[in-house]
Image 1: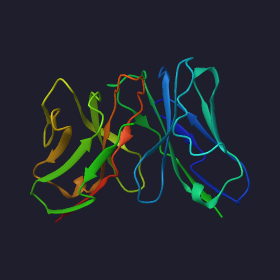
Image 2: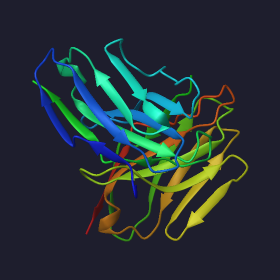
Image 3: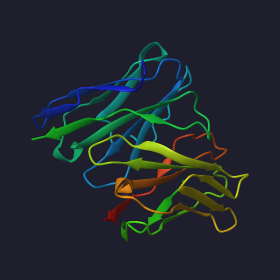
Length: 115
Length: 114
């Protein structure tokens, strides 16, 4: 596609429910990243995928968070048993490859609200 | 791991004046430093970047400088305009341990006063 697409754009869920957030990267981009941005805060790294390599999961805040990337394209971030502190904007980004000097293109994000 | 500090957290300037945002990083092996602009309610967008083999880079009213010895880099915006109002994030990347993720600073909210 022309850009990084994320869905849904907004999600309100009850505490304790599971949610799935979807990211469709730019066609041909082999690297995909997930970040979290809490209200008024910076960008917190969660996980990244590069091709068929094992993902870097070092930023996932707890075992309630997991992510998959199927077929080297679409990625799904799953949060189980959501808590209020999970409320944030979840941003996905992709780049042509995971290298130090390839800029990210971000999606518009999914605003998650846990009530 | 890498840590990036960004200052100031908020910055107000008069239209036409210059704005400077500074970042320091901890990992001397980092070799790529992008800057992102995020307007209210929108996605972050890359505005300029610099690699460690370069000391300065300019693009119209925007410039970035890098001091590898001191491990700091700065964003300079000249002749500021109201549309420059946004949150700006610096980032560092490229440590040789293979972690290509960006570590972002906490952001600077720039307000350009007309």
